[in-house]
Image (cartoon, rainbow over all chains, first blue to last red; front, side):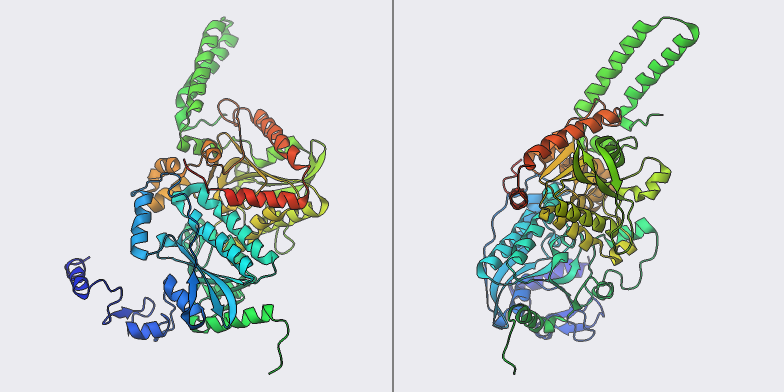
Amino acid sequence: MSWLTEYVRPKIRTLLGRREVPENLWIQCPACQQMMFHAELEKSRKICTHCGHHMRASVPERLKWTFDEGAFTRIELPKVPADPLKFRDTKRYTDRLKEHRDKSHLDDAIAVAHGTIGGHRAVVAVMAFEFIGGSMGAAVGEGIVAAAKLAVLQDAPLIVFTASGGARMQEGAISLMQMPRTVIATRLVKEKGLPYIVVLTDPTTGGVTASFTMLGDIQIAEPGAEIGFAGARVIEQTVREKLPEGFQRSEYLLAHGILDMVTKRDELPATLARLISLLRIRMKEAA
Amino acid sequence: MRHFLDFEKPIAELESKIEELRKMSEADGINIAEEVGKLTEKADRQLRATYAKLTPWQKTQVARHPDRPKAKLYVANLITDFTPLAGDRAFADDAAVIGGLGRFRGRSVVVLGTEKGTDTETRVAHNFGMARPEGYRKARRLIELAGRFGLPVLTFVDTSGAFPGIEAEARGQAEAIARSIEACLEAPVPVIATIIGEGGSGGAIALAAGDAVLMLEHAIYSVISPEGCAAILWKDAAQAPVAAEALKLTAEDLKRLKLIDAVIAEPLGGAHREPDAAVAAVGDAVAAALAPLLALDGATLRMKRREKFLEMGRDALI
């Protein structure tokens, strides 16, 4: 933190008002360090126009990009007991939650919406990495269950965009129990013969990966996403070996048979639409 | 040679004094029965007092005690005609997960356990109870086998977690765990899981998504190890005792949160002091949990199991 970032930036923000993205903002690609004008980046769906790196996206962006004409209806998610363990580390969990709620305008690390993709009705759940690392506690688990129930109710496929650092430690074993709970959610969808499609985005790790994420009928990842169960650092410390190039990245998982495909963000809606059509419309008039 | 934990030092001292006196009396023929009796009583009181109010961090150490009965002892003492079955049919047999067919009180069952080993050689052989994808795939295969033949599944969970390794990731550790959880949840037969030592995160729930989840009194069950949690949230692994407290990982906590179904009392001073008694207590608790489930058909079992997990945490107000 320099004088510049601490002092000058807040002042500029005040001048510009509370706009989230000032129009004159240049954004640096975290992969190739090139600068891009933010409007250009918005058009490219946060894919770096220089190196193709897929930057992390917010929940509203995901929903807008995924549904036809960016039109969708968000559903309200069931409330869950807040801070059941009265957890406190260097901060109170309730304070941490409030901070993230104020900052993100989300209740927790998940949002659920329905609309159409390529004309097909679909339910989409999106995880928010920006909300306590996309960690899974009762709220995320309840969100996945609610999304599954909505898909069944609407006779629609369920599509989940994952992004998570793993379990919500502040909820202890309650967060662990979200693994079986979300697995049950996937069963509810599959039993009705509805497609369950998972789109893995950067990063997807820990208990989220080892539950509903890995049970998709179809598993798609965005390019270069970090995907795994154990953290890279933990593995390095355990096996005392250098990790291979590209370890735990989408392309590595694809090569190891864990994913169906790696799909660029701008091709994703068309891919989802085609998959839904192929899985659900058994016969179509020849063109 | 008994291993004593740090907080057991006063008890250890008393017990060694008793032992010394006994040896002396044998050698010199001096009658010191009264003295020994008094000391034994004192040691007993101390042990009772210590174990009546173990902190979560102390319980973590008891749960990891090197002499604590391991999964294999439960199988040896509770299961007759045990017939181990090996392999995931795809890549390997993972010795961290033991499993097979056998009889529990006369009834044919499928048994699964995560085995930590009891000495250096067996610990290495069982990879310290940390399973690789093959272990979870073997578990899934055996649970499905149980379903086909209508056999209850009994699991004995004792693991610090799934093995964090390069190969384990390359072969789909996350998928293997997810499928094993799914197999537990989908089984058309009773699934009874007992956390006998450490219930470490995803590696434990992979074998513990059952109709009845039992926990030994001093076992722990947690989403992350206290050390790991402290390193991340406190940025200091030395804060593990504080993290252990905050995580609510004891059997008592989990029962109160309604995340497990029953707590099994341990012999005084922990399961490691009287392994056979601890194993027998688990046997009785498993039998009690199994009995009412035997009357239910597969669809009902699955439905009730789902309802149980879906309700978890919804009214957790502690």
